[in-house]
Image 1 (spheres, one colour):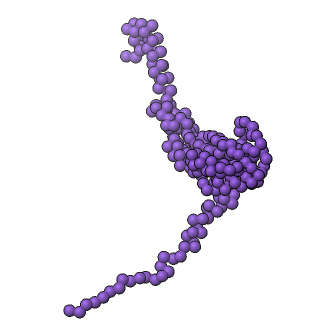
Image 2: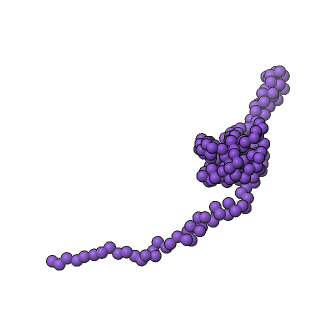
Image 3: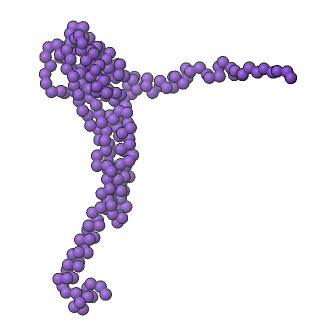
Length: 223
């Protein structure tokens, strides 16, 4: 016997019938709260690239960096763990080429090249001072994992809210230069040399069998 027939027969009073209907609607709406809504084939969770600037002020002179500043710059790079993907800028109010060359020599020890220009930093530089800026990028995928769509009711045929979290999180963790996720690597000379280095090494290597096959010496003994 249905609720409406119970109500008509007097076995279920009108207030009780209204409360039962409200409870049924509430349970139905609660079940729709975790329904998948993404009907595309793209994940709603994409890597986000953030940049952080670190700076070090150094003393300069006519021939480049002042005495002892080059060693201090090396220690700073080591403490920062300078690595591939970091960008190094030189902010020099005097625009002394010797200062840039001295910083470039230190950065070259860590496999880094200087970038043109310089990002905006706080504070003014006085005479005889230059600022070394290290820009580091980091890629993360916010709000992953995401199990908010926990309902089996899926009339929209949508993707799970956690779709793409594993792939994009692994990509963000493994990419050497997070900026490549934003605009890709540009076709500079550095990229070309790096991409062909392994091929040139393989082609220039001498064949392993060039010296012939060396057979072990054998000896026979009479009875």
